[in-house]
Length: 346
Ligand code: SAH
Image: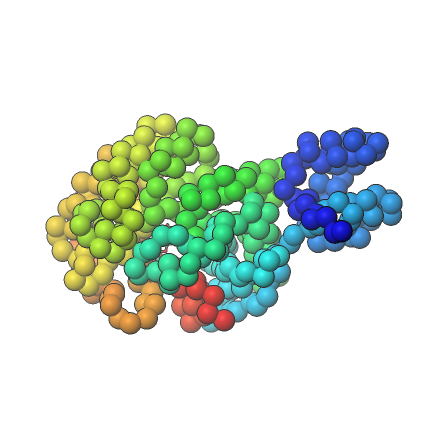
């Protein structure tokens, strides 16, 4: 009978060392294999050339290496690249490489589909199928780093968890992936160049603060008025703004880290003076930055980007309160790679 083999990358370095000791080998062998798996990105035990044939066979008998495969790569006219990533069980997620003048950013997924129900987001129309494992998140970053070197002649510099899924609903795995991404024996990237974006799960924001994480936090706010936010992000009824605000105050008190708010201004939804005033009241308690992001239509025209007059009003009023504000243009729209457009169309 075939026994189900374990994914070797679910093991920590210590567990891998223990495995070899239990097999009568040296703990050091564990380090070697660990390096093959994480730093050298081996997809096959046969690639591990400094490991004996017998040992490779032993590994083969006990474990599998579940690695992702970039199934399809689409390139945008603006240099953005979207990867359709096939997981070991056949499910697909998407991740995006976004080149800019002085940086290359990877936008990675944390779940297959999403359990939240933001009405303006294409991913929300997919059912949440499962959480991604730490290695599946890590592999997306490795794949984009390779593409960045190949097509843009430089390594990846930044990571945003703004692909498919709600990272704080897969917190443990996201944290493990970031640990590996920032570890010296992983990719050795600075946590300051990593942004975790959340729709706002208060309990988990507090947990992040308690864990003293070093990466940055972005909150997809879109409205600071409960009634409006609930109408476009229905889970706001469960996690109302009062709780979100309280969690963010806790986060700021503990980390002293500036908070970024992602915000789309829509015609007839959140484009009045009252909306801006509520936003100011909401975020004034700590140093904040508001990213006004362009709306990427996902279909029926129910949501329309507000006109430039409304955007200008936001910018003026926020700046008058010393709140940093940027107006961000979308990238990769022609290949459905922009915010909110990831939906496994192909
Ligand atoms: N679940 C996380 C991360 C994924 S969404 C979160 O909500 O933050 C990444 C960003 O894209 C969020 O700020 C989200 O609100 C925004 N977004 C979703 N759909 C969009 C669309 N159609 N146009 C522009 N931004 C969108």
